[in-house]
Length: 124
Image (cartoon, rainbow, N blue to C red; front, side):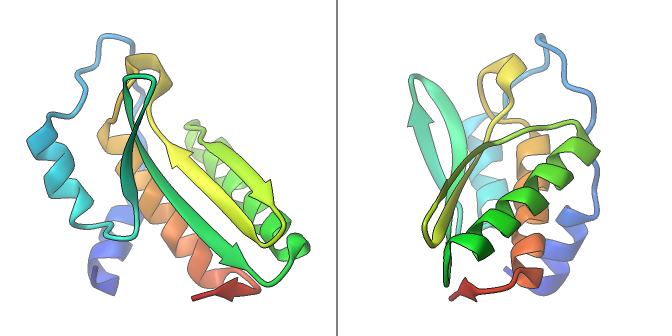
């Protein structure tokens, strides 16, 4: 993904999502996923989700990154599953209300990638 594509997607903001909002179609997911090649499409208990593992030099850097993603989530009102372990953070985005993927999840994945570019101790 180019920096311009990441920047454009990460500059968008989440829209309020209600339980009757449509999930993204497989075609729409595929088109958006090409913009975020480091993210894996997973299915957990019948729910499509975006997931990426970020690797860090130590626990403190992983914890700091977790906190930065938590702040992003609060600012947008859209919250991921975060698993913080020694040297890594697993971030999983999906829209809880619709039990699947919405454009908001791709916005937040892009914002997560942008935050990772600023993170201390990120291993590439």
